[in-house]
Length: 117
Image 1 (tube, rainbow, N blue to C red):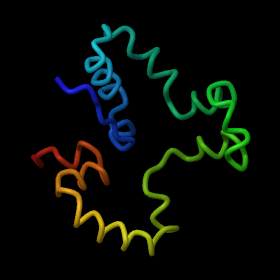
Image 2 (cartoon, rainbow, N blue to C red; image 1 turned 45 degrees about the vertical axis):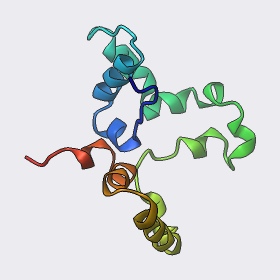
Image 3 (tube, helix red, strand yellow; image 1 turned 180 degrees about the horizontal axis):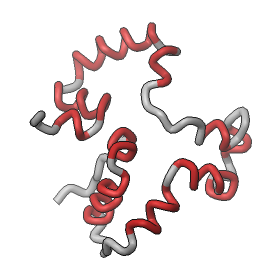
Image 4 (cartoon, one colour; image 1 turned 90 degrees about the vertical axis):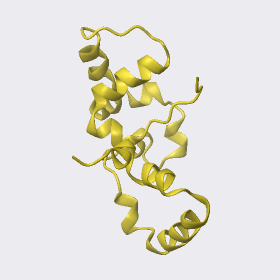
């Protein structure tokens, strides 16, 4: 049985409840459907923003505006506009060292590996 679970941000954004169930299952943590809404209420980006300084007190000195910067927009891919030159280097290296499946997961999450209906 694998002892490492890969969780992708895109998958969390797409299906947070499903990913919470998958994580609990992997960790063999009993999870009832009645528990899911309260867990979801505490792990959303908005909920984490409200408790950011308590959850991540060390971020105050690391990020320019502390946790406000860490919990910024919660979107994927914003970095692509800033790193265009680096993307070419990444694409070259990814083609050399990653399988197509690994690269698809890395860039898009589990949905990239699911068959299209």
